Amino acid sequence: MTDHEQRPRRRGQGELEALVLEALRAAEGPATAGWVQERLGSDLAYTTVITILTRLLEKGAVTRERAGRSFAWTPASDQAGLAARKMRKVLDGERDREAVLASFVTGLGADDERLLRELLGEAGSEGKD
Image 1: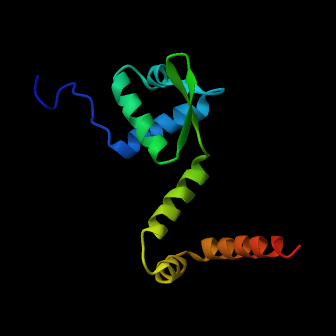
Image 2: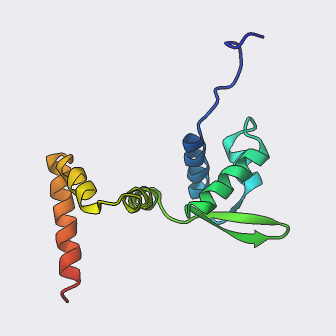
């Protein structure tokens, strides 16, 4: 068999994390690693699923609870919450927060800038009650 024949495409870590999170969100409650593996298909090893879930746990993207001798996993937040957590992590890693935020805002399109201003206005007015 040559490299171009029937070899499954290797997925990146971020893509696998997204697939695992998507599977967990589709569950009707906490799900085991075996359930996630079954949901994603047989080409993903159980140990790979465990590794991905453990990385997601370290990132705060999932929680786990004991389920017999194993764990049941639950997403910690929705997709928007996960994206926001990533943005905060990047911002927290920078020394000049003001410059980073200013650069981010000036790079926004008009619609996104307007939405951000509205959200900031709402957040500011909630604190005044």
